[in-house]
Image (cartoon, rainbow, N blue to C red; front, side, top):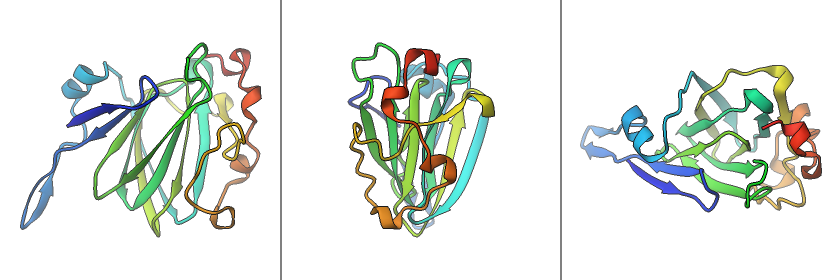
Length: 185
């Protein structure tokens, strides 16, 4: 696996090495010892999966305080634009974001440490999205940052007319409300 740190410290793209022949391919998508060597030890406790159609935009979600989650995300079918926004108190890249195309063909993954809001937009007809987390889902700690926050200027690579959003995502909070007291990181 190749580990490539992004322009925000702690965010990593992980590229698998695929071994292929006329039958298809094989690759390792996660190996604890290799992950620990490059990123550090994370105790992932749960694997999640979602399936969405083109235009679905999920995010920008995060959990606050002690329930903050580190995530290792990948796409096993289709293609998405994945986004991570730095909300870590005192970070020199606070309020900045990383965007990465994740697709089944490349097998690329994105590691997002605790203290980030996360979301994705489906660019293919359908996408199956999988992610590991290191903390359980706790509804009362969940929050949503506005997907269309002007200060972020995220190009979701789909038009507003194509976007399919939940009520929760339509009513995300603005960036200026992401205070240390609110976030609790």
